[in-house]
Every structure is written in structure tokens, then in C-alpha cells.
Image (cartoon, rainbow, N blue to C red; front, top):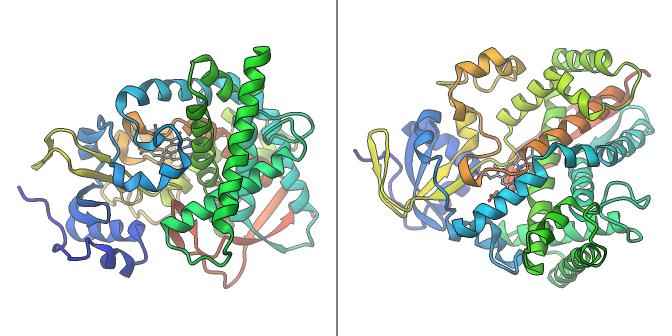
Length: 447
Ligand code: HEM
């Protein structure tokens, strides 16, 4: 049976995607018009098939290859092979190692105090703003996530907050350098016009600085055999990974971890600002579990189930990574359709999360969708903010800990309200990013 989809276009689908404001919206419209399985053109993948049905997705869950052309923009960030498209033989042990660090409770616990300190610093600063001052959540919260993951990946301590190291000014320099690298490379991908003629040079220098930082942490591990400084680098050194692969892994971790977690928290606060009944329930739960304490312990997170539902519902409505992709290496049966080997299979996470067959009234914000009973009624792949199968996100557990902690610290102390007239438009900038930021007013809760 032929897969439905739009007519073939000479420009490879570019203008159709641009006309609706980007691929993230295009995929919603395609599925609305053609159903759960759609054939379409995509720059870099002439024959792509998008699947928005969680039951049909099961047939693709084993796929273990990403299409190289779609991820080529990350080539310059890697010295030892683009980590997004590593061949399975190299990827599987690398993934196992990452999971042992990112998903392991011991490393979460070790970094929890540092994460908390960083979140509290932001809460303190916001608590001191003039009452009802506007803050831009997306920028501040992605910077906070970068501080946290910088500390996690490069090692923290030395009075430098949770953010990347023993060196003087380490935290801030890591944040600034990585932002420079990212702005340049995402700018190239999304063809943002350059205003600074030296941006490329500065990004190059920033990348060299970050790689040098990794090398110094690696050298410290090798020289005194300590593994406590950076769990990630320690594990990579002990597994015998090359210095280049270690540098690449740290870069990829910073990249994968910080915008995603930062926007997840930003979208959640925005939704809570518009749904005060839900915000009140979150705060009541925090008061009950934390009492007078300003921040949760690691063990408290499990006692905040309502906060967890709110975060999940927010990532359903605004999945930080709006889509993923794989390539078939043999013919694949997908319900009534046959997909030939070499096809790009597109995972439209956003469209899956808004599929009305599994999510009644899909645009409505309703954390009750994530009670254990409701979850058990849906197919496993109806909710996939961290992707699917052997290339899914290794940082899911760590990201959840970070996001819950930040939300708990901020909401225990502060109340966020929407800025009247400020329109928030989701666009795709590698993550689901608000085009003009997410501005909200903030005031201390007990004022
Ligand atoms: C709310 C925060 C986050 C979200 C929503 C998110 C989502 C995703 C998604 C959708 C993918 C692609 C999955 C696929 O293709 O099926 C991915 C990949 C990845 N993520 Fe995350 N992520 C988050 C945070 C993190 C964090 C904190 C880390 C690291 C500590 C991380 C590390 C990675 C890595 C290494 C990959 C590449 C996976 C591979 O190729 O094996 N992510 N993430």
C-alpha cells in the first residue's frame, strides 16, 4: 500500500516547510492531513516517512542508525567521529558507559548539593528583584542548566559552584565559551545572519579552550588516579577511550543536556503561570513535603509525584527535542505499509504527543494524564520526550532530577506570572525554543 503524503516538490520540500514556520509545525500539519504514517521530502533526506502512531512506532523501535546527512552539522564539534551517527559497534559500548554515569543514582547524589547550590543562587537573585520585575526564563534557565551540566561533566568544587572546575573563573568561562560555540554552529544550521565578523574565530577559540579544559581534567585523572573529580571523564579514561573521544563526549554532553533541560523548566513555569490552580497544587505539595526547607533532598524528589506529573505534561505539550530520525537498513513492515531499506524514518515526537487518538483534547494542559492509572491505559510509546530505542537519551534520568530540583527550589520560593501581551511562539532551534523568549514576572511567594 502506498504511503500518503504531499506531492513531490522540486526544492526538496524546503519552501513547504518554511511556509508554515519550520519542520516542527510542518510535521503536525502533515499528520493532521494525511494520518499517522506520512511520506514527505526533507532537505537531507529525499524519502522520509514520519510515524505519529505509538503502536506502529514499535516496529521501528529497534532501528539503530541515524541518517548521516541530517546530523552532519555536528561534524565540526567532533574530532573522533560524529557521536550522533556512530556505527553500532562503537555506539553500543559508548552508550553503556554513558548510562552507567548519567543514569546511576550515586552520581546524581554526588552532584545534588552542587545542583541545589546553583538553583538556589538563581532563586536568591530573583527573590531580590524589584517586585513583579520581568525575567526572561529561557535565557536564565538554559544558562543555569549549562552551569549544572558543566560541573557534572568537568568536575566541580573549589568554591566555584557546581560548574566546571577547579580553575579560577571556571564556571563562568565554561558557560560563556560553550554559548559562543553553540551560537556559531546553530547560527550556521539555521542560517542566522552574522552581525559580528569575528564570531567564527571566537567560536573556534572557545572550542579550543573547552577542549583544553577537558584535557586538563583527563590529565589530572591519569596522574593521580582519582576518579572523583568528574564521574564522566573518570569512566571514559578507565574504559580506555581516546583523548579525542573524551573531548567529543564532553562537548556532546554539554550540547545535549543544557538547552533541553533549560527549556523543559521554562515551558513548565510558563504553563504554571497560566494555570494557577495547578500551580497552587504544586506549591501545596512542596510545602507539605519540604516544610520550612528551601530545597528538597535527593530522596524528597520521589515524594513529589504531582510535580513529576506537571513536568511530564509540560514535556508532552512542549517536547524539548521536537523530533528524531533513524534510517532503515533493511525493508520494514509498518502496519499495511512496506518501507524499503535506506529510508529515513522520522520520529515526530510533538505530533505523537498531540495525537488525539491517545490524548483526548490534546492541547489541554492536564497533569492528571500522568496518574499511574492513565499511564497504564496508553501504549508505551505514546509519550516519548527522550526518544526511542538504542539511540534514545542517555541523560533522561539525570535531566529529570535536575528539572524537578530546579522547579522545586524556584516554586517553593517564588511565584511566576505571565507578562500581559507577551506572545510566546515555539520555533525549532535544535530544541523547541520560544522565539522571543519566555518573559514572566516574578515575586517572592510569601511577600
Ligand atoms: C529535559 C531534558 C532532555 C530531553 C527532553 C532530552 C531529549 C533527547 C532526545 C529526544 C534525544 C534523541 C533521542 C532519539 O533520537 O531517539 C536525546 C539524545 C541524547 N541526549 Fe538527551 N535530553 C535531555 C537531557 C539530556 C541530558 C541532561 C543529557 C546528558 C547528561 C542528555 C544526553 C543525551 C545524549 C548523549 C543523546 C544522544 C543519544 C545517542 O545518540 O545515543 N540529554 N535527548
